Length: 165
Length: 195
Image 1 (spheres, rainbow over the protein chains, first blue to last red):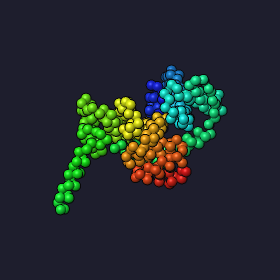
Image 2 (image 1 turned 90 degrees about the vertical axis):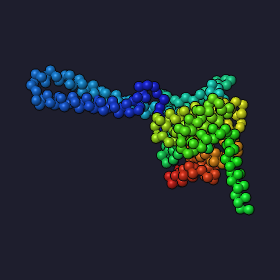
Image 3 (image 1 turned 180 degrees about the horizontal axis):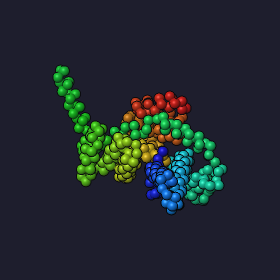
Image 4 (image 1 turned 30 degrees about the horizontal axis):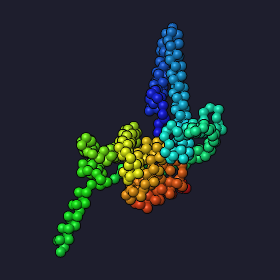
């Protein structure tokens, strides 16, 4: 599955950036926990009192960082899922893609967002008079995506097909 | 008599070898041979060297596209492969643009077939489908192996669209033309029980 079409920082996150940030948060968290423990075991009560707020704040921040990393992962997964749905929807509407119409005249495909659980695809045709057709392909698309993933796991990749003569 | 016969055969073979394929020049032919032998850098250098002097720009751009497609196939999966596929698409689109009005020629269908396969590599399924189906309309103008590759690419596209019945149909046709990729994928579909 191709990477989702997102900009700059999100691309960084997608290409292993999330993993790096997660590791960084864990390192900070671990260090602070170790420092706090060290302080409690070895240091005087006055030192513990002085250092504790800072260490606790750093631990809290690294926990927040971990949550943010988890949230970003969920967000990117959602983009991938929407991207896949949109591509499958485009492919299902065959006549538009074979019609030879230029890009500006082809029907526009939009995948439904929030509040559109029933309306998965909205097709807006523009040649003469605007027409809006709402179709619910949700289950059928889910089935096609499932079969597509199985096929992708099983088949030789297209790169195994020799380049032309 | 045998010697005369052998001499005549050798002469005929030498003449055939000298005839350019698909109306190509000798440079493009050499580049093609280098690409098929896996010497992609040599092929690219030959083609770039001919860019200014070669009158048949379509064949230059087309073969350059095939060089980059071969590079993509040799590269490990990831950003490098995608970059090579994008470059290949660029050259093939230029080749198609250079055709001018000859959009119903064998060259046009050949380029569209190659474009379709490259777009499959880029997972741009709508463009892959558009090009492959257009190439299919001119399949009779293509060679046997070219038709086999085109049908195999279509089979792969349909499989990735979740239409295994359609995929089988194209894989079977490609396998009948001797395409090993299609034959192997048909076997894998059967083994996985995907109907």
